[in-house]
Each structure stands twice: as structure tokens, then as C-alpha cells.
Length: 207
Image (cartoon, rainbow, N blue to C red):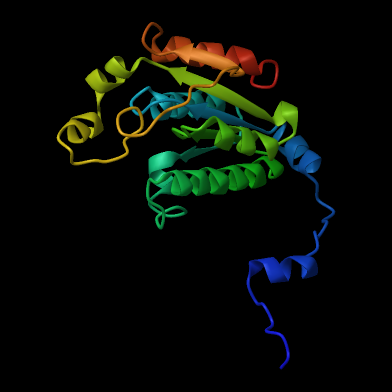
């Protein structure tokens, strides 16, 4: 009997080759007059990631930069709508977002990722998809009690009632970055002050 022929993803890999194109990332960056990179905002729920992503994009757009925000909640309406919140699903979510971010950087964009991304190994894997200078891990830092007091989406209140399981910081762990490229303290700094710090860290590219 002839052996079964595998048709899954692993079987196809030897037949898939990388296709090069004449238009390069450098050409796209030159057209946009900017340096592309991925700014990865990580932190607890309600630490301020989406707020900062929104303000940062507005600041960069005002400076004539070409940007795109990849927001965790928004992506779960489409790209990751089939994923839950188990550790395996969180890892897959981050893998997908990182791959999309890499494609956008190759397109010459400044990509702003606002994602809890609770596990260091997953953030390290995301970083590994980029050239060292193309990825900036920004720790949006606020204590758990401050995030719970803000609770704009009511997640912490629902977790306390048992309506939500595996909420990061309550039912699931968050591993803060040990050596982030930048840390912004949203308990003591205003959103504008945080954005000022981020933009200064990007200079002269974001000037």
C-alpha cells in the first residue's frame, strides 16, 4: 500500500519559496520620507495602551508620518476572532499580530501595536521577527490597583463577580518587561507627557 500523502501545512513547506520583488522596503520608506518601525505597547488592561496609541498616532500624523495602529480589542473582531484567552490562544494572537506588524513595517509604515501581550516569551518572539532597530518595546506601566480603579471597560468589575475568567492581572498572570526599550508610568505622568517621552525616543525619525 502506498504511503499516505500529507496535504497539511508542514507537507507544503518544502515547496514554498520566498518570492523577491523589485520594490523594496527602502523604496517605500523613501517615498514616505520616514523610517518604518514597530512600536509595541504592552501593559495591564486599563494601563493606557489604547489611549497612548491613539494620541501617538495623532502626533505622528500631524508630523506627516504614515502610521497604522493594531489594537488588541479591534483585532479580535477580525484577525483573531477565532481565538479565546487561553495561554495557547494568547500566544497565537501575538504571533499573528507580530506577523502583520512585520508586513506593515516592510510596507514602510510606523506600526503602533497596543496589546496586553502578557508573556515575555511571546514578546521576545515578536521582537525576533524584526531587525533590532525596527522594534521598540514600550512598557505602559501602572499598578494593578490603579488599572482596576480606572476600569473603563468594566473588565475588573466583571472579573471580581466571576463573569470573566483569565483576565490578565486577576485570573491570568502578567509578566512585565525586564528591560523594555522605554517605560512610561501612566500613574504619575499625563498621557501628553507619556507621548512626549515616546516621540523624543524616536527622534530624529519622528521630528
